[in-house]
Image (cartoon, rainbow, N blue to C red; front, side):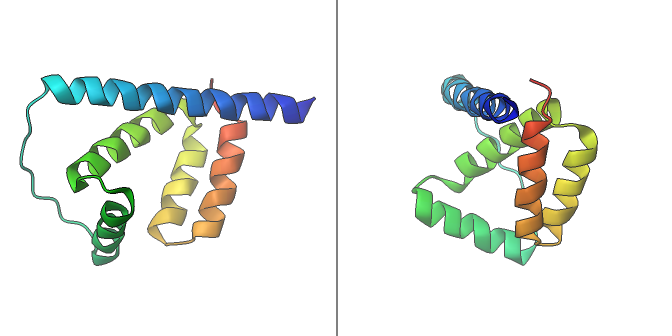
Length: 110
């Protein structure tokens, strides 16, 4: 039955992300925009441009969703997993990051 529990936890996480997207759209309607200059790595900028092209969204929307997603992950995923995940992503170890994220979702605080 552990598999059912894991699927349920993942479903709950997906549901929470969907609700976050809806609330982000509502917030966007009422909130003004602010210009901000960020220093990011060239590889991050390249990925942001690729996401922009693939998703057809504005870069600011991608950043808004990314920050909200990170904030949600901080609430749900145990801190030790989040640190490992961050390190793996910053070192561009994507396969390791996927493994950590799967494990983190299984152990999520839902």
